[in-house]
Image (tube, rainbow over all chains, first blue to last red; front, side, top):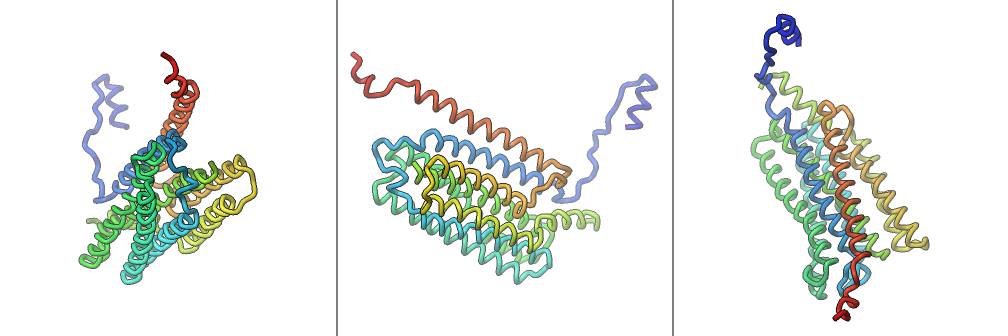
Length: 209
Length: 121
């Protein structure tokens, strides 16, 4: 700043320092990952918009009332919510450098995630068995796209979780692994936030129609 | 890696862990905010319009609870840039959602119904 001012007084062209100052490794990962999550949020926003537009176009096919089992959705929601809590506990264990406890909490998180996926796939299989396939109506196309995209995210989150558990087991709680675990924690909690939208707008509002 | 860099990475990791108490408060609030909408829809006696408004309000509150207690959002993290990114995203989401619903609603209501179109020669 002072250099620039001095140059201006002398009537000479103003040069700016173009060399970047040094960044510690991984210092920008959190912000970068957050921006990725925000872009993912836009994907889900568009899928919600599609469901909002097409969600009532049944093409004389089954409506939400004929298909959804709210008690199953409630169990599913509680599994995802519990997995968010157990991931939070894993992060606390990481903070205290208790690797064993952290791995245990991560494993429990993974089991909850797996249970969530299992119930969701059972629900999908049941719907498809009843003829409520994605091809049946615009409502079902948008339903499977929205809920399926969320389920796919959970699947990749689980793969990531297992990968990181192996990483921690092999290399220990090194700085890079801490950073990756924090990224996954943000990803996992973010998926829970998206699920709030799904169970409210798709399942609960669907039952009100 | 310098000790300074180590401390920095450690700080940001710790900032994302929060406290056990915070996690439990967030979880407790989420359970309540999830259970009430489910009970209202499954066993509620309110009319549909009121139920819909209430469950949407609960969802909005629960999203904020998750943001604060699980994602540890604040205005200071990363020099405020995470909050800026979030605000920008919220603006985009609101435009995309309300715009799509508004335009498509008008398109639907102004379209000639299909069965009438079939009768025109």
